[in-house]
Amino acid sequence: MAAEAAQKVEALEAQAQRLLGAFTRAGYEQVAPSIIQPAGLFLDVVGEALRARTYVFTDPEGEELCLRPDLTVPTCRLHLARHPGGTVPARYCYNGPAFRYQTGSADSAHPREFRQAGIESFAAADRERDDAAVLALIVQALREAGLEQYQLKIGDLGLFSALLEALAMPKRWRRLLRHYFWRPEAFHAELARLTSAAALKQLGVPRELGERLDPDKPEEAENLVAEYFDQSGLEIVGTRTLPEITERVLAEVADARETPLAPETAALIESYVAIKAPAREAAGKIEALQRSSGIDLGPALDAFRRRLSLLEAAGVTTSGATFSAEFGRELEYYTGFVFEIRVAKLGPKSPIAGGGRYDSLVADVGASAAVPAVGSSIHTERLLAVLSGEAP
Amino acid sequence: MRSKLVLALPSKGRLMEQSAEMLAQAGLTVSKSGSPRGYKGEIASLPGVEVNFISSSEIAQFLKNGTAHLGVTGEDLLREAISDCDERVAFLKPCGFGHADVVVAVPACWIDVRRMADLEEMAVSFRRIHGRRVRVATKYMNLTRRFFSQKGVTGYRIVESFGATEGAPAAGLAELIVDITTTGITLQANGLKLLDDGVILRSEANLVASKVASWSPALRRLERQIVAQLSAKIAAK
Image 1: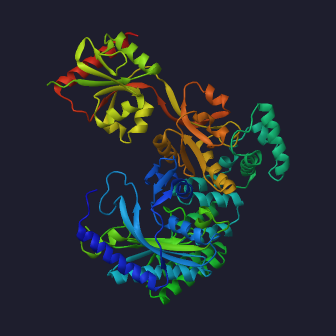
Image 2: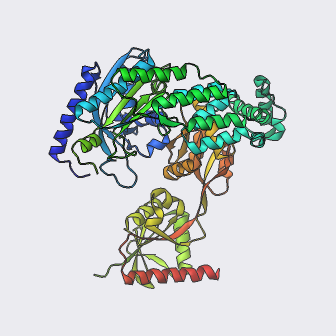
Image 3: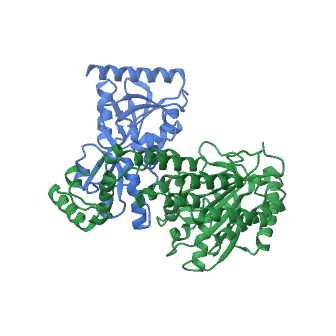
């Protein structure tokens, strides 16, 4: 990339100070996590897909490192370094560079080196209140920087989880559907498999073994699998243990004997995922779905409504916000509320800010148990482009 | 000064011998110019050709950036090294040697995993049990990433491996591998098996032209002549 004009650097710096000013006034402590991060941790947490977009390198000692592709994971690490366990409530803000390889060529809306300004809040007890507080502060900071017109898009992965919990199906099917949720095609295919008796009966494990196994007797099954290994000359090689392999073999056997998912249940899941509506209206639609199908989403729907009210009370107009049930599908570490702030000029592929709740990330990074966490970051080059009228 | 056609050939091992043999049979005997320990060569019947002996993986780089006009190397190395492979190089002739399949192999004791789709499900439970992603040892990072993403497998991470990859699962360095195999015997000896739909690429050595090298009409004529002589030889076989 060519050197940046000094003028643009100054403008970005001035804008960053305005954003950070809003954050620190709200009680968020400014931090500067390391730019160079251990690559292994990132790859374990965010997966191989992001590796293709991360600058990974090896230092002279042979250690694999990376230039941080975002600031959320580094801030989690910083929080854990200060508070082992992570359960002490803390709020941080930052402004600094992040790096992503852009396939094809980098352009001004997708630079390979960009500055993120953002906030992260850990271990707050009242989740909805904290969700609302984080989004309200981001909106406030954007307003102080000069942004007046924007569109708000929200989603709630907690509702999806609650829907799965409310539907009768084996626990492992819920786990699979939650896993595949991020990839619409695979999700659809998995739903189709679970509703088809023929597909479920396609036993992958050797038939002579499968026929002898009883999913309700895991200990006995382990012996039978061990016996089968002996007879076929197989040995345990590598990390996975006999109980672990047996568990999945039993899951396959159990699937083959399971009653398939009712077509109505699959249809209900698909119709929930398809909901797209203004936020308030969406709550009504979900409630209607709940009533017509006789399921109970429990506290998740109340939480969704309460969050909307808290947002209004904090000065965020939710009447123009769009809810999309499948929103959040590209961002694998979110677990609950998710949001994105867009402006018409930049289009849907280049949001100005985004964020959400990620209650399992702190544990993935090293805490011994899950820690409530919610955060958001602003793409500051895009914001400046919009405010200075440079955006296409 | 008239520029020469740069032909990059493998500098060692079976691939070097087989490339030389193939060219010699086509009447294009390559001899070392200067020191026999040097890395330059020539073809007596085609004085416009300069031969460079370099390592197979470097040949891919030479063709990618146009330093060489032609080269003989494995398709696996080319597809791994060049993300927009078909834009940058043209495959002129498969050579009939250097056969190797790039495959996904897992421990044979994984009786619950036979297809790529099983791998994804296994990865979910692996992460739940071990608290980390399942690791794939390979030197083919790009081929692996592309193939896994095509098959919808996401719950893994790659660890780079530059040798004895088949031993990685038993050594606890990775859970599965992507590697080349010719007969499958090494896989078996290491307690591994191929996945049913786990062949990423059936590779062999190819005569390849760089599309980004600087080509003059004279060099194109030389290229055509080399291809014609090789084709005659392959047809005669």
